Image 1 (cartoon, one colour):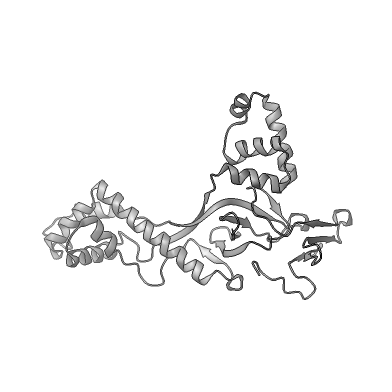
Image 2 (image 1 turned 45 degrees about the vertical axis):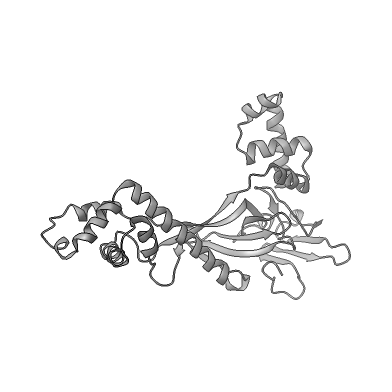
Length: 312
């Protein structure tokens, strides 16, 4: 199964319940459709039953889904340390994109859908950075006094080289790439099963202290012994973190062909799809796009509003 099972023998796709009532999604094995049943006991007029497609090969950012399509592959779940909000990332094999959805928590039944936050490619991103001001302060101390007097001259020379802007940027890029890659590999290895729960982010990229020697050696081109001592100084004086942290991001899909396919699957008309994609996805202003298309801004605005009503 591509997503979290609903822990209910009578529900095979999804179940969400609260004091208002319940939302269930089951699959009709004959037609292959999902059957969505919202039973709102507090406000019966909001109850409904509807059928939706059980597969999607493309979706739009901003869409709301009553259930995760069965062809999507679960990648990982994340929980923000700051807000507690939960998101899940799925991969659509047919189009090769990753989809980030918000997981409904403590909401009204009518709002208990999955909101498509972003579509593109899942990547790790480093959230830690060196404290260069601390390095500058260290190097400005009296070289004949504690602590510089105990640091080898060759190591101090390497630290001064690292403190130059070009070396700083080179070192940061190498560390960021390594932290992002290994951090995300760790998530995909250990949190690619919904049963494992959600990975809290930002998070430590490594269970043990990070080794900066590769980035330092590639940046400074110094002997291994010198590089090792430079790393010790950087960690001892907390210029670099022992445990660099990482988060994740979805690098936006930039294929217009994909977005048109997603708009068609969402049920938008041709003009709704075109205007929604240009304004909401590709960030063109309504006035600029209307002028380029040769129509009134109100026409574009109306199509965008109509598209939002369809997908939300």
